[in-house]
Image (tube, rainbow, N blue to C red):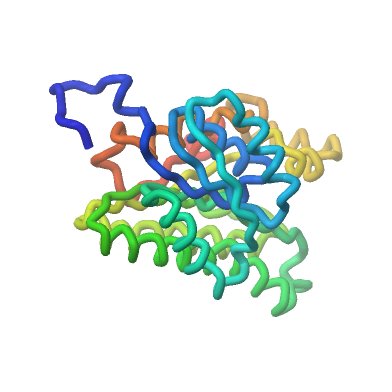
Length: 261
């Protein structure tokens, strides 16, 4: 952290010289978050199962101040997370991580199988913990500060139908964020979460394909529109940068006013 001039400055948001790992970076919100970090100067290790999607992310980053390097990997393979962290940290010491990879299975509660339950928990809850654990061990060993950003959901705060596994995983993630903050903040490693609302992505467009579903969701959003992926960028830049150096254990909802209404 730079010496304080006694007031906030635009330079507080600069991520130049910082290395950030972003999971789920091949498309949608994860891709937008990776590009945001690069736009603010960070070196980004973009992670996704799809090498083709990662190539698209890297191409979109051309001309940005930061660098995007790709690392095809399946973060649901928990045994591979330590190697993923090790390889990224060897390229350049990791400062930040954004856990954007996730899965949602929409079905009635009585139709949830143990296999579906385990799939959702593994990717949405287990993987973020064990990847952050692997990164933090290296940060502590090297005496480094850091910022870990988890991705929550509206489902963590309100009950929505046909979402029990997803809501459970995301609610657990927010509890985990606070607990990790209480353990790691004293060592200079912050843990926060972003709670996105409904954004204009391929997944959301599919979910809101019927007029009835679209109207139901619009009625709940005070801004009366879906968010654009880039509208999460300010929150991402804030939580990764020195602008949030005294912020930890917090949930920043970016939802068009939904939870505030």
